[in-house]
Length: 322
Image (cartoon, rainbow, N blue to C red):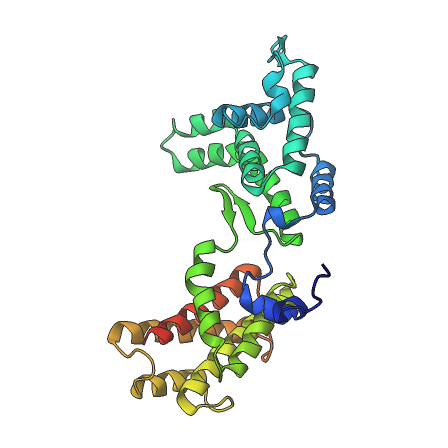
């Protein structure tokens, strides 16, 4: 039977897909194809990471030990080692662990790959220096040992985050571990309800600026992040203009908030009023500093652009509840 050629709106319109799935252009590991995974692997190899070594052996062995039933590193598990010679692992053990690491990286699902990478990051922490730091009360000496302990992890994290950001992957490596760049809970509890609310009639001006904000964020450039800030604030301004005047085009942000509160169109209790005032102050300062319509003091970065987007989405959500 011939498949119908009819396509849904979201299948033919990238902007619509963006609105329906506001993920800020970030992807999970499972969204990558084999070519992309291999390219990421080669970038790490060129940075001298994931070499056949005791670090890789300990990473795979720890993964096997932690998840005994799954035993993701089968070659390492079935190998009769570890074989120690003069205090070092023999090449047969290292080679098997390397092959397991390569296979898991290229062929396994996101949770397994990220768990392996987090273990690899952990074994790059110098545990002796960490233990030594606990023996000192002097802040300067303690800090010196801690910085030394994290030196290799910090180097790995710098390369990891650069590579993952350029492939729009949704995690960042920190001293606390691998964290989501944008928490799924924020997407589920804030972004999706707001996008659904704005899908009704009458919000065209808001959606236009929000879609532009999301698109500019996805460029992953200083210019894109600055444009994201501008469009995000414009979206909030359009939202308030529609609430107060039923159309886009009239009113500045501060006045709009006051008028909407006075008319009972948005929450007006003392706690909410303070929040709105603080948000307004933050947005105006950031628009002046990094936004497009004004001479920039500096370009925005990913962290700033995401903060502004999150503030505005929370603001709109709070107004929806009223």
